Length: 162
Image (cartoon, rainbow, N blue to C red; front, side):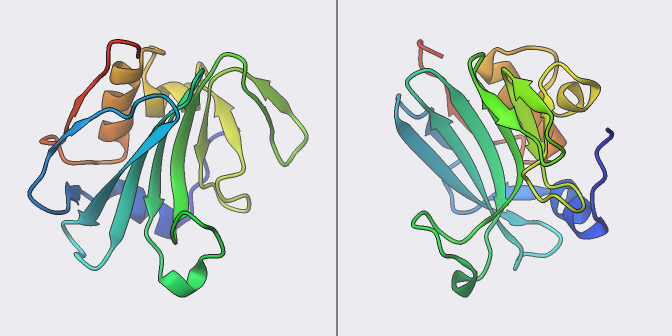
Protein backbone atom coordinates (compact mmCIF):
# COMPACT_ATOMS: atom_id res chain seq x y z
CA UNK A 1 0.00 0.00 0.00
CA UNK A 2 1.35 3.43 -0.85
CA UNK A 3 0.83 6.45 1.37
CA UNK A 4 -2.50 8.02 0.42
CA UNK A 5 -2.66 11.36 2.24
CA UNK A 6 -5.59 13.74 2.15
CA UNK A 7 -4.78 17.15 0.68
CA UNK A 8 -5.12 18.70 4.14
CA UNK A 9 -2.73 16.24 5.80
CA UNK A 10 -0.26 16.60 2.91
CA UNK A 11 -0.31 20.41 3.34
CA UNK A 12 0.27 20.09 7.09
CA UNK A 13 3.21 17.71 6.61
CA UNK A 14 4.76 19.64 3.72
CA UNK A 15 4.55 23.15 5.20
CA UNK A 16 7.77 24.54 6.66
CA UNK A 17 7.70 24.34 10.47
CA UNK A 18 9.67 26.65 12.76
CA UNK A 19 10.44 26.07 16.44
CA UNK A 20 8.22 28.34 18.54
CA UNK A 21 10.17 30.55 20.92
CA UNK A 22 13.84 31.36 20.96
CA UNK A 23 15.17 28.01 22.13
CA UNK A 24 16.36 25.73 19.28
CA UNK A 25 18.68 23.36 21.20
CA UNK A 26 17.23 20.56 23.30
CA UNK A 27 18.53 17.52 25.17
CA UNK A 28 17.02 14.22 24.06
CA UNK A 29 14.64 12.80 26.65
CA UNK A 30 15.96 10.33 29.19
CA UNK A 31 14.34 6.85 29.41
CA UNK A 32 10.63 6.99 30.26
CA UNK A 33 10.56 10.73 29.51
CA UNK A 34 9.05 12.78 26.69
CA UNK A 35 10.18 16.02 25.07
CA UNK A 36 7.51 18.16 23.38
CA UNK A 37 8.72 20.96 21.11
CA UNK A 38 6.12 23.49 19.91
CA UNK A 39 6.29 24.37 16.21
CA UNK A 40 4.33 26.65 13.91
CA UNK A 41 3.88 26.94 10.17
CA UNK A 42 5.93 29.60 8.45
CA UNK A 43 3.21 30.03 5.80
CA UNK A 44 0.21 29.97 8.21
CA UNK A 45 1.46 31.00 11.68
CA UNK A 46 -1.88 30.02 13.25
CA UNK A 47 -1.16 26.36 12.31
CA UNK A 48 0.49 24.97 15.44
CA UNK A 49 2.30 21.64 15.67
CA UNK A 50 4.04 19.59 18.36
CA UNK A 51 7.16 17.50 17.78
CA UNK A 52 7.31 14.82 20.48
CA UNK A 53 10.33 12.66 21.21
CA UNK A 54 9.76 9.78 23.59
CA UNK A 55 12.47 7.52 24.95
CA UNK A 56 11.08 4.40 26.58
CA UNK A 57 13.09 1.86 28.52
CA UNK A 58 13.37 -0.28 25.37
CA UNK A 59 11.91 1.82 22.55
CA UNK A 60 11.87 5.29 21.02
CA UNK A 61 9.17 7.28 19.24
CA UNK A 62 9.12 10.44 17.13
CA UNK A 63 5.72 12.09 16.62
CA UNK A 64 4.59 15.14 14.65
CA UNK A 65 1.11 16.26 15.69
CA UNK A 66 -1.15 19.09 14.68
CA UNK A 67 -1.98 21.07 17.81
CA UNK A 68 -5.77 21.15 17.66
CA UNK A 69 -8.21 23.38 19.56
CA UNK A 70 -8.51 22.43 23.23
CA UNK A 71 -12.18 21.41 22.92
CA UNK A 72 -11.08 18.62 20.56
CA UNK A 73 -9.18 16.65 23.17
CA UNK A 74 -10.32 13.92 25.49
CA UNK A 75 -6.80 12.86 26.37
CA UNK A 76 -4.66 13.82 29.32
CA UNK A 77 -1.64 14.85 27.20
CA UNK A 78 -2.94 17.78 25.18
CA UNK A 79 -5.04 18.42 22.13
CA UNK A 80 -3.32 17.02 19.09
CA UNK A 81 -3.92 15.16 15.87
CA UNK A 82 -1.02 12.80 15.09
CA UNK A 83 0.24 13.22 11.51
CA UNK A 84 3.43 11.11 11.44
CA UNK A 85 4.87 8.78 14.09
CA UNK A 86 7.87 6.48 14.08
CA UNK A 87 8.10 3.67 16.63
CA UNK A 88 11.61 2.27 16.94
CA UNK A 89 11.39 -1.03 18.76
CA UNK A 90 12.31 -4.42 17.31
CA UNK A 91 9.83 -6.10 19.69
CA UNK A 92 6.90 -3.84 18.74
CA UNK A 93 3.73 -5.34 17.29
CA UNK A 94 1.09 -3.33 15.47
CA UNK A 95 -2.11 -4.51 13.81
CA UNK A 96 -3.29 -2.39 10.88
CA UNK A 97 -7.01 -1.77 10.33
CA UNK A 98 -6.90 -4.31 7.48
CA UNK A 99 -5.77 -7.00 9.96
CA UNK A 100 -2.14 -7.21 8.81
CA UNK A 101 0.22 -7.55 11.79
CA UNK A 102 3.56 -5.72 11.70
CA UNK A 103 6.44 -6.85 13.89
CA UNK A 104 9.33 -4.52 14.67
CA UNK A 105 9.95 -0.83 14.08
CA UNK A 106 7.34 0.94 11.99
CA UNK A 107 6.04 4.29 10.73
CA UNK A 108 2.50 5.63 11.19
CA UNK A 109 1.17 8.28 8.79
CA UNK A 110 -2.29 9.87 8.83
CA UNK A 111 -3.56 8.21 5.65
CA UNK A 112 -6.97 8.78 4.12
CA UNK A 113 -9.62 6.67 5.78
CA UNK A 114 -7.44 5.42 8.65
CA UNK A 115 -5.90 8.44 10.36
CA UNK A 116 -2.65 7.52 12.08
CA UNK A 117 -3.80 3.97 12.86
CA UNK A 118 -2.22 2.54 9.68
CA UNK A 119 1.49 1.72 9.84
CA UNK A 120 4.27 0.69 7.45
CA UNK A 121 7.37 -1.35 8.34
CA UNK A 122 10.42 0.85 8.84
CA UNK A 123 12.25 -1.03 6.08
CA UNK A 124 9.39 -0.68 3.53
CA UNK A 125 9.53 1.89 0.71
CA UNK A 126 7.11 4.09 2.68
CA UNK A 127 9.12 3.72 5.89
CA UNK A 128 12.43 4.49 4.17
CA UNK A 129 10.89 7.58 2.53
CA UNK A 130 10.05 8.95 6.00
CA UNK A 131 12.71 7.48 8.30
CA UNK A 132 15.65 6.78 6.00
CA UNK A 133 17.44 3.45 5.86
CA UNK A 134 18.94 3.38 9.36
CA UNK A 135 17.47 2.47 12.76
CA UNK A 136 19.97 4.73 14.51
CA UNK A 137 17.70 7.21 16.34
CA UNK A 138 19.67 10.40 15.49
CA UNK A 139 19.76 9.40 11.79
CA UNK A 140 16.06 8.47 11.81
CA UNK A 141 15.31 11.83 13.43
CA UNK A 142 17.14 13.72 10.66
CA UNK A 143 15.18 11.86 7.96
CA UNK A 144 11.93 12.39 9.88
CA UNK A 145 12.73 16.11 10.27
CA UNK A 146 13.33 16.47 6.52
CA UNK A 147 10.16 14.55 5.62
CA UNK A 148 8.10 16.70 8.00
CA UNK A 149 9.80 19.96 6.90
CA UNK A 150 10.94 20.89 10.42
CA UNK A 151 13.39 23.77 10.89
CA UNK A 152 17.02 22.81 10.10
CA UNK A 153 18.16 24.95 13.04
CA UNK A 154 16.53 22.59 15.56
CA UNK A 155 19.29 20.71 17.38
CA UNK A 156 18.89 17.67 19.58
CA UNK A 157 21.75 16.63 21.85
CA UNK A 158 21.47 12.86 21.87
CA UNK A 159 22.26 10.77 24.97
CA UNK A 160 24.90 8.08 24.83
CA UNK A 161 22.30 5.33 25.39
CA UNK A 162 20.43 6.09 22.15
